[in-house]
Image (cartoon, rainbow, N blue to C red):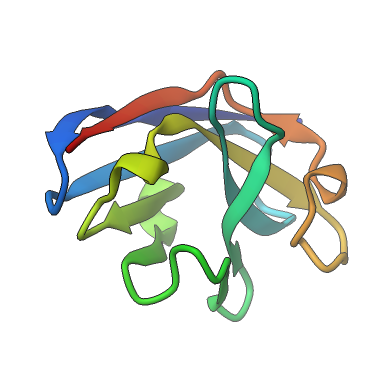
Length: 124
């Protein structure tokens, strides 16, 4: 099993940047993909970005494309989410998730292992 642990959240003004980190603890050798999701109060959990670990292929939701970048540091077993040009609508709890085995890795139901989340607040 693997336990993702997020960090790096905080409060910024619109137009600012944050970098979230997700460090994986446990059995990481067979992880196929890591994803970032977010959930704002009163809204459903929303997929943000995915990286497929073996090939470093990345995918983004249209709402963050061009502003967010997902990347990995294999040696540190850490996945990052660099968030630039943040907007108030990016305010949410951000979650990191991991999956073993093949899947699209674009839906929350594809992921079996979740972190506790890190809060991002963007003020206008």
